[in-house]
Length: 165
Image (cartoon, rainbow, N blue to C red):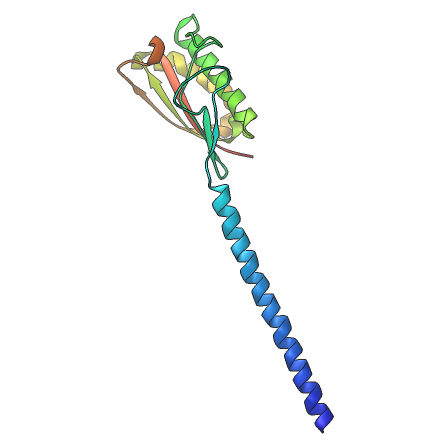
């Protein structure tokens, strides 16, 4: 009888130890996930390429989201490309595509764009080019509005938000 009682006590102690360790592991895992998600939420800044000295980042990643600064239709010397709104829009979309791909995303993962136009009447011409960069099943949400001038005399500026793959 004493032996059975002794074995029962040992079994109970073992069970408490196993259950206690399992609970501790759950809490450790939960803490690890929390600290991991906090570090994932820290912004990662993508500095402009070249010797541009602008007070901005080309993109900022926070968690699985990538926020692109407004892009102008400029060349490598920061000059607006010739050819008007369509040429500028094409240059912008090419820059956006490169920025997305350089930072782990793509045009298929863009969720929102904002388009600023120096002349809202050029929206249709901008849209003819803009739409060619997105698949019909991956059209992002978009806002477009006319503004009272853009930097460098640009006709259009586009900013985007995308999910990182």
